[in-house]
Image (cartoon, rainbow, N blue to C red; front, top):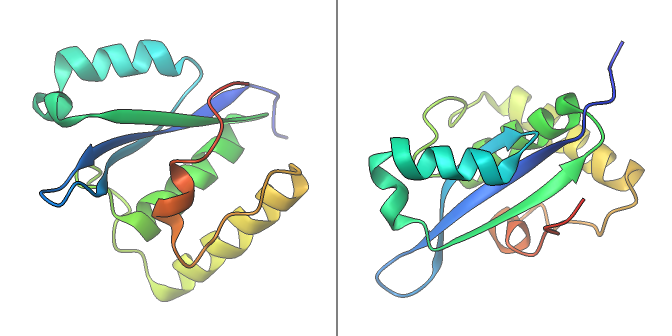
Length: 125
């Protein structure tokens, strides 16, 4: 049984030499502002972060599902777990993430180019 625990999937961005967005890290937190402050003090790469965004979900399970999806498909530089899932796992994650976004009545994401849509996701609950 899934319990109601609002959680956010958050995204940290940097820029490459050409000025294009580069996904640095994807995570989950019930308090993304506090979690971002922790990254700032604990991670040597935090000085590379130039932008952040997050998307709220009704449960931590939903937030973690989208975290796994975005790590698998956008391969953020500093996420080390889940970056190279099997094709079967990637297909399952994509299907479940699409269903979640449709069920939540959110704007559809372009799943062929996930990086472009990550940055447009909402920042408020």
